[in-house]
Every structure is written in C-alpha cells, then in structure tokens.
Amino acid sequence: MTIRNLFDPKESQETIVRINSLNSETQPLWGKMSVAQMLAHCNVAYELVYEDKHQKPKGFKKFLIKLFAKNIVVGPKPYKKNSMTSPIFIISDARDFDKEKKRLIYHIEKTQQLGGSHFNNKESHAFGPLSEKEWNTLFSKHLDHHLQQFGV
Image 1: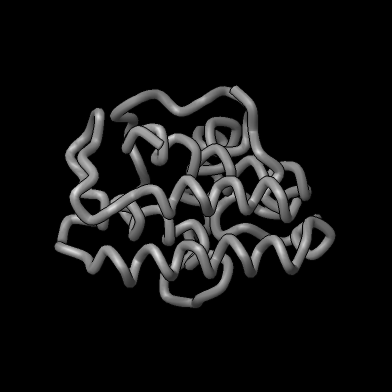
Image 2: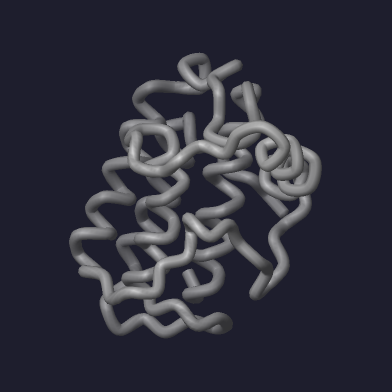
C-alpha cells in the first residue's frame, strides 16, 4: 500500500482528482454506505481536528482506544473491507453529496496548506500526540480505503 503525502500539494491534488471523479450515483464495490454517506464519514476525521463537535474519550476508554485502535489507524497496514469503525464515524442518515464533497476537498486543502509541521506532535482526538507521519497516515489511509471502496 502506498500512502500519499497529503501535506504535499501534488499528492493532495491527486486525491482531490479522485474525489472529483465521484458523482452522486457512484456505487460502492463493498459496504452499505452511499457515496454521500462515505464523504460525510471521511469528513469526520477532519471534524475531529478542526471542530469541537465530538466528545473526546477520557480515562480508561481513551487508554483502550489507544491500545487497540491506534496502530490500526496510523500503522502501515491497509484497512480490511467492512471493518468496524468508531460510533462517531457511523453515518446512517441521508447526506447531501455536493455539500459533503466540497467539505472534504476543503479539509484536504486546509490540511495541506497548514503543512506537516503544524500537525507534528499535535494532540489527536483519541490517540494523544501524533507525529507528522502518523497524522498523514491517518488522513491518507482512510481516504484511500474509501475511495477504493467506490472504485476511484
């Protein structure tokens, strides 16, 4: 698996091109989400960074998340198809495709413009401080997984 460097303008633009190849009728190769739900799902990773709308895990719960999920999320192995996700990432209601697509592209562009040094040692929602590389893996691997899910 190749993990794109989303802090690099060229590589983040390549990801945006993939997103722009989706349309509201694009069907998944696996899973139950619609394309609009998938885009909203991908936006959650950025909401955890840029918005204060999701409650942060604390204490023993945070310890367990770090222990069991951190290496899956920021490690080099690709996600398995239909793998479990955190409840805050579950999108079960209908979403507006164009709105979610614009939000996701905005988040990717904002992250790229802030650059890797902005994220180095930045506290994540559930995993504690992450390195620049770990942040990039978190964003890039998740996006790639879901873009592959929708054939792009």
